[in-house]
Image (cartoon, rainbow, N blue to C red; front, side, top):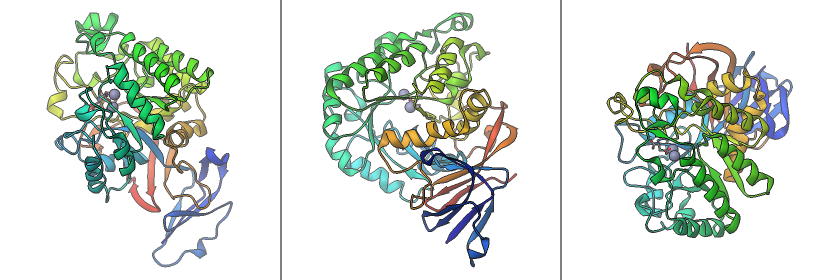
Length: 429
Ligand SMILES: NC(=O)N[C@@H](CC(=O)O)C(=O)O
Ligand SMILES: [Zn+2]
Ligand SMILES: [Zn+2]
């Protein structure tokens, strides 16, 4: 089968393209990229997409997603999570291992891959660092790598035993597998549920200081420096995280870092009430931190935008922040928030946004994606960047509706998502 995408603006920064090009897809590959491809080459069963007024980009790669299967299917299943990805223009996702059971062995990686084999988007699993994420004994890192994990992560917490973490980093270096670090000093959290500061005081809620994150960011960078392991820092939320990542890069270390849309879109000052929808880890920070993250994305210190899509049940989130679980959904709002806050906000060009959402994530993983040259896999997304609308969580494909952005006015609508040359999502008004 062929798909011809005509009249769109192709934004393919891996090939330095930002211009009007038609794209022909044959089977699962990009077959031609050229200024005017004749639709008469199409036959029965082929598809012509008129992308006039739209942008055509490599599919987004989300390095940080929580699918709740196995174990928490009432929050999300592999199917619904992958459909949410398709709705968001995300063609590959890396699910974190904090399921029940934890993805901490080759058998469990195999089981996850088996469950995901008919999923509408690519599922690239991440293996836990320690058995059961208990922080006591290293998981079978080599075995999981042979079975197909793309990274290691203890996401949900940090490996607090620094020596054990160092041993994990030695293996990460040996088997050439990136370590995705969730940075949170467990003791320093001290029962905090939102950013420490005036707002937490006003709401009478216990605070999480910036150092909770920053001390582990510093530790992990230093351990990466000594072991040579590739380190990717998850959901950076503070000004000092950005400063430390910048220092690591100045030293030429193998360190990359991600920012989530909520952390560059909303500050703790916008938390209007004690509502579980505003609760995630790390928390919404001060306006000064938000500004520092936007600047770090613009300067290139921050490499990647990932969502940390973390669905939870409606009831568990409809509680005080003291009780609700940490996490918000993100797959279906990330492109619009990135476009609205960063492109319209003047921090990034659209091509740079595509770098953060597709090209750089592929580089972190060392995979041949995020690139629409002839012969590459046809994973792509078409979006209408003129379309203004209000975010409506009731329209989400995700089972999780836990977002603080319901009703927010944004610009940028994903209209078509193609994975392996197959249309997996089309927007219908
Ligand atoms: N980010 C969150 O607030 N929650 C994540 C865990 C995590 O990413 O640390 C979850 O699994 O719910
Ligand atoms: Zn985390
Ligand atoms: Zn996470």
